[in-house]
Amino acid sequence: MARKLNPEDLSILKKIAPELVDSKCGHAGWEFRSVLPPVSQHVSNSSGDFRKRLLRLSDHELNYLVDLVFEGMESLHCVKSEHVDVLIEVVGERISKVKATELLELYKFAGD
Image (spheres, rainbow, N blue to C red):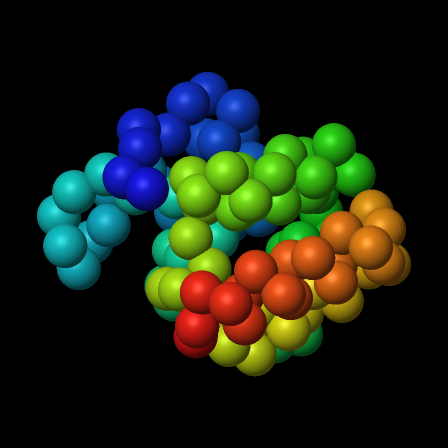
């Protein structure tokens, strides 16, 4: 799952967490390898805040992140569980209920 963030990833990260000055984790000292975990762990201060950040994304950007989760390139394991619930809700509202259900099943299958 370790990957180097590409320009689209960095653009999404900047859009939902503009307060992150760079793409380096201050705690670990290395570049972020995903988008959702750093926003969940280091930036969002509540489920409502995480939701507002996700709603900044276009449907294309949101779908892109979800597709990365299905490909194993974007982790939900380091996302706070209450934020995973929010992500699933937003996907159900904006993308499709089927995709949200599949995301929930994947999350349950992989374990939280």
